[in-house]
Length: 112
Image 1 (tube, rainbow, N blue to C red):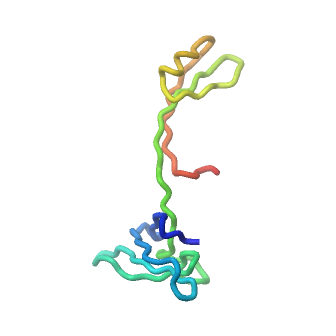
Image 2: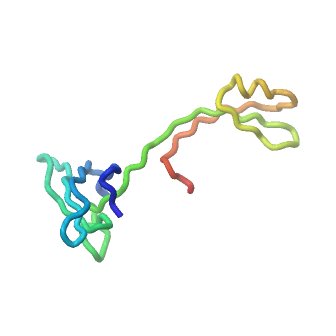
Image 3: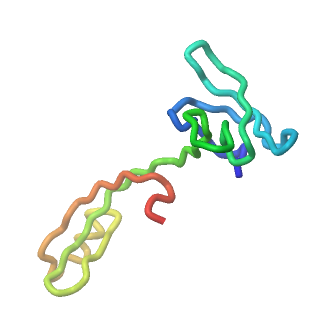
């Protein structure tokens, strides 16, 4: 179900504002940013414009993106170890055969 405390966009990428999630017959009320400005829209409780098929104006939750830099110590015959800084990785450098910097860029909930 749609939660007015979350951020949404349309399936085709337009900005959306949700005004109410308790409309008659479970309708969602809000606005969609178009070329001429904000346009009023209503969606089903599941965020759909049409019941029977996907539509470019359906609501899609926008999940925050996160970026992290981590360091992975690689050891000869044992498991690699992940560290949040190069300094921490260096504290565990005994028998390390490599220290790899990894840049992570992911959407919240990705891979779950």
